[in-house]
Length: 205
Length: 205
Image (cartoon, rainbow over all chains, first blue to last red):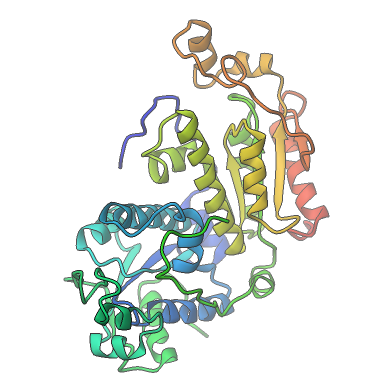
């Protein structure tokens, strides 16, 4: 962890610990880190998982471009430095949600292994769950929900991940989901099954 | 709200809304923004409220120097620009917690009215609750939990809020709590009573 720049700080010991939260809330905290190309289905899957969890009373929340790029990270652009800072802040916010006892889902391309590994390092063992949304780029390009592939092919943007910029696939993700091979509920179900298998959330009745 | 710097963004409509969260969790989301001098008791009160709420099953979480300055804002110092950015990010994170349906408590000096008003503007009416921890500076200085007043009096630090830097007290805080006039549970109880009175959390049985 970085050291803060000044020493005007004390560590305040809270009155609540993780087991107390888990006991009261009925589930553990964890971060589901979805990574994959634009159009792979990260945000769509994340929001379906969020809904299914909330229907069970699990405190779930999605961080995605909508609520991060327009808010916390509205000061950041798309330079390499800003992309790195973007992911750093998201990882720190995810950590806070996990500490709060929530199941947080992040839905960002997050193309670099080093950035994802830095995020993983912020969390206790087993609480960072890397979910590789491994949809073939041809499918992503056909979907092209933001028109980015079209713009990249037309030369209007030059740094689209998978076209003009690299995507470093996870080497050992906890989960791999190809959204071209499953319908949405099945894809979401794979993630929820994993959470149940690890005791993060109780099995559905 | 700031506009993001690039247009490679789409607004993703989530599947969950605030009423659905409130229904499943049994309480509303809100931000309790504690402001006051160093030593006024912000963090101590915030952690007691957090514990009392969690014991009721309310998803509560404290943001304070411990988990913010060492993490999300570890890149920031104490220059005027960095102090402003510090509060901006905290406000954005508080907004995310409120959107998730949580009761988030922030415990930062946050001396400037403009910064607190910016935080208030991020949240729907009634979901930003400014709590002025209005403990007399003489009491704060006697407590001096971080040794800051001693250092300021010795000239070792020059910009301590209340000594070398201004504190702009809230003009119309939702709540005012003097921790030198109440014991800790009473002070925390004032805040919880307020949450109950506004229907943020259900009344205790």
